[in-house]
Image 1 (cartoon, rainbow, N blue to C red):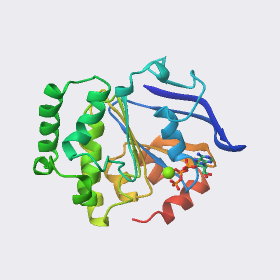
Image 2 (tube, rainbow, N blue to C red):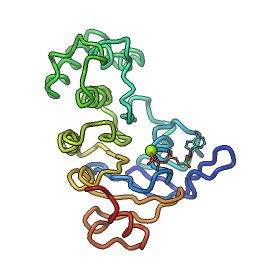
Image 3 (cartoon, helix red, strand yellow):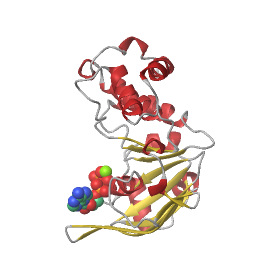
Image 4 (cartoon, rainbow, N blue to C red):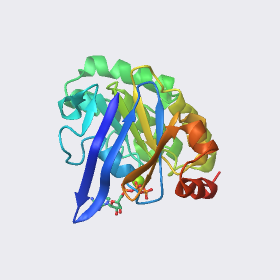
Length: 235
Ligand SMILES: Nc1ncnc2c1ncn2[C@@H]1O[C@H](COP(=O)(O)OP(=O)(O)OP(=O)(O)O)[C@@H](O)[C@H]1O
Ligand SMILES: [Mg+2]
């Protein structure tokens, strides 16, 4: 279980996260919902250790996430952040080799197998600029999976994609569910949320307003704020 306890984040005098308490179960996909600026990306950045936080405020199975290995937490960014000067296979192998999790000898076959699973083996030697948005997104996800992270975070995985790609990415993310993997995604899209999430965390002004199963959240939101938010979510 990944547990966030009393987590606050302030930047330039602004309260970005305000005493956040929530938890994330392995085997489940949690969607972070909430208006723009509510703190979804910031919460994920704290979990990914990209923001300073009190060492005891985020724990995995009782241990501070500060004690996890870099390979244990992966994040897929909204704009993919692939290395433009590297080929697809080099993008997949960069971190595992740099962090010495794998050698070139073991990494290349694993990366090729990963590309095969994602139907992208023919793109292995291409530079990212030659790929479509959907292909870049799948490469970014494949790259994050290379080190078999225990926690995988997605920041608006479909926002940079053609609307027709949304279902494909939702299905792909749903297929990543594994008993010992914690999956968290921030999204504005009702469709991906309905198709792949199990659990919903609704944020506003850096606070958690609701934390419930997806079905409960959508069928009977507790707060007026969540009700009006759901009504205005694009379908
Ligand atoms: N590095 C930073 N320095 C100062 N303020 C920041 C920084 N990053 C984010 N913020 C502020 O923190 C608040 C939360 O931002 P965040 O990006 O987490 O929201 P979000 O819910 O992901 O929004 P969106 O749906 O638009 O992506 C916003 O008010 C934002 O302006
Ligand atoms: Mg965001």
